[in-house]
Amino acid sequence: MKRIFCLLLTAVNVTVVLADTPPAPNGAAEQKAGAPKARPAWEREWAYLSRYRDANAQLAPPAAGEKRIVFLGDSITEGWAAGGNFFPGKPYLNRGIGGQTTAQLLVRFRQDVIGLKPAAVVILAGTNDIAENGGPTTLEAIEDNLQSMAELAQCNGIRVVLASILPVLDYPWRPGLQPADKITALNRWIAAYCARNCLVYLDYYSAMVDEKRGLRPDLTRDGVHPTTAGYAVMAPLAEQAIRETLN
Image 1 (cartoon, rainbow, N blue to C red):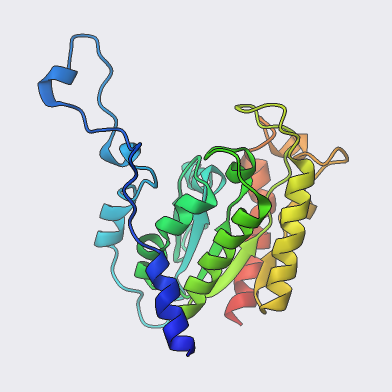
Image 2: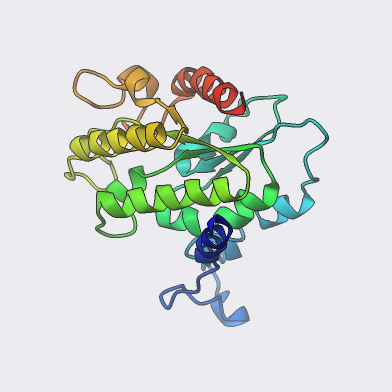
């Protein structure tokens, strides 16, 4: 029965083609003098399925004894690698894409996590849902997507670390949403879900929140994304969570 459930759950994670996906440029007709260059193909996809496709194809299987870890998330995960300080020397893979919601991460979970055969996945996601990057949504919908990713991983023998959302007082690109209460509620759910299902909860929030329930000013420039100082706080917490889940 469990085998059937896993197969059904895995079937949810399929490639989706949406009607509102922008069409590809129309050859030379689009390349007028002074016109901006066409965006990369992966930027014209809803879930950016091509973003890491080549890198994934070139990746060798894990070596004997290698404990490969995939970090899956949005710009907070992607930005970790930009400074060149993403766990040097460790078999950790960064599969973050800026702006993504949990729905988009779920769609690419098979190719960017399961297909890479990691020992564990660290999932940090949900803040862009609360920022309504994909339109208005509910906490229950975010929770469903996180739970689906966790269950997909477990069905494929991958251990799971679920991270708390970082504190935010206001999103610069969509001000006025007052996200603090939703972030607190979602983190509370993530922690409880991990406790119920013997998963590791990675609590970035408590180490990075200020007295106003925003991201500490010494750890960010825009109130949402960590600086190098912010990632320096996050790194040992992530390492501790990885050790815990592997042990």
